[in-house]
Image (cartoon, rainbow, N blue to C red; front, side, top):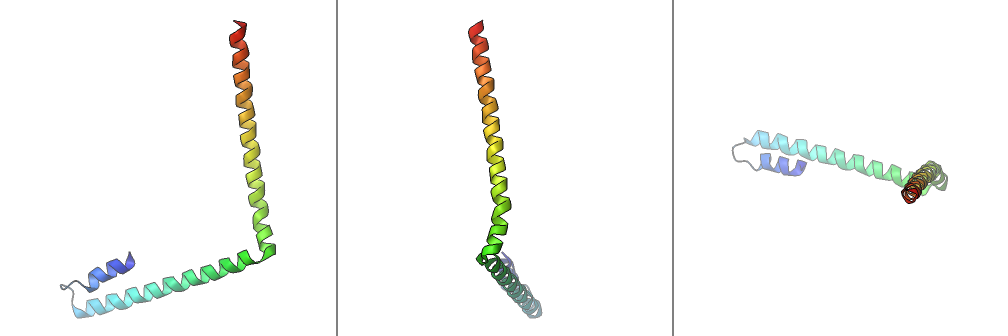
Length: 94
């Protein structure tokens, strides 16, 4: 997106040469900074996920969260089934 916008300014014949040059330098610098930031983020993430101790540290709360959601869903299903059973028995009594 940034490259497309910069290209439209650079390739526009209505813009003067200094405007094109400034735009080209600006967008080139921004893209280099963005690439550098993403590379550093990738390095940090790779470091975190390659360390077994960090992996366990990350897995534990996630695992607890998943188990809690499963238990809540099981309870909801049990409540729904109990309600259905209650409705069926009430219907037969009539």
